[in-house]
Image 1 (spheres, one colour):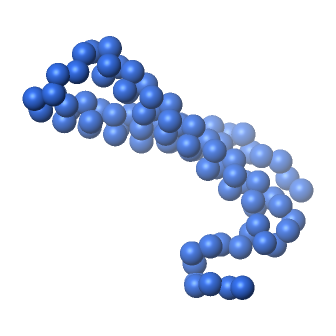
Image 2 (cartoon, helix red, strand yellow; image 1 turned 60 degrees about the vertical axis):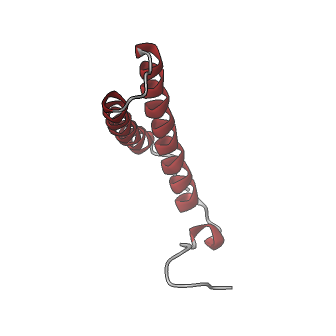
Image 3 (cartoon, helix red, strand yellow; image 1 turned 30 degrees about the vertical axis):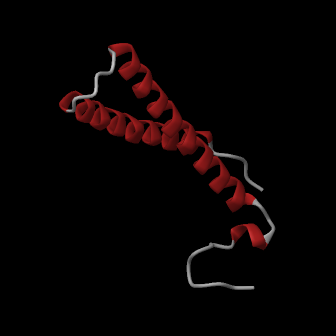
Length: 87
């Protein structure tokens, strides 16, 4: 049984953070072009929350994927959504 590969988890977390940053900057550009008035502090915290949330999601997804992969029970290795339903 293998453990969790930390570098892969961190790398996926960083990738998720990058996606969050991209979405946050896109949202910031949309807000600046609209008539909505949002303070700089609110925009900053929106950016922080989006980046942190996406990074946490990336960390969690990769950790769960690795745990499923290393579990000896074949039910955990079953890929749902690929090839139909199997009972």
